[in-house]
Length: 285
Image 1 (cartoon, rainbow, N blue to C red):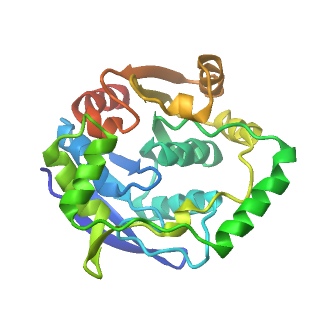
Image 2: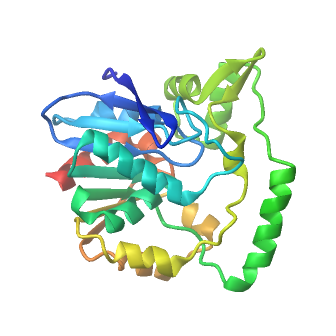
């Protein structure tokens, strides 16, 4: 495996962990993980890169080795601001790669700060189900209820049990890779293994997802975009999106290429890291 180093930055009053596969002077690539994931998940993809890259992968606030947020829940806009402060430290322009939640953050960021992004790779960052304003009362009520009775994360008896759980959720994941991920996703606490994540991430977003606002940001993206989906992913179905809605979302980007990775699900950076790395390098040139 390619060695990485841990860097810790003070970002917006939080001690932020950034995993760096360092290669000073090489083009800068910033990779952003998804919900309930960590930066080390990109190890397999980075191992498969053939060209020289200086790769930075932050653990989002409340994940991995980054400090938990100061409040009792998390707000999407904070990810955008955290990323902007991180880019201050790294320098721009950057090549930006984001998976799932990270893809959604990156897509918005590339439209909010277009001059800071040279090229953008979106890995299954579809956005969320469009909502209606009349859903707001129920959403706020649910949010308040979950603040009073916050969800918790389940404990595991060992890293082996966590690795087994990862494989049960993804049949393409090898034992070697699941063992590696378990050691980065989990940590020992009170004789159990717990995920390195703040349980508050499971609290529902208080505000509704406003597709029109997201699309307005997407239309401001000037960087060329590579949109990559796993061919066997069920994420569209889980979001309640059909092929037409998927195409409509992609059409908001002015310069976009769309591909699918064969024999890959939502976690395509785990399932087919070699094919993914090849596609990314071909696009970045």
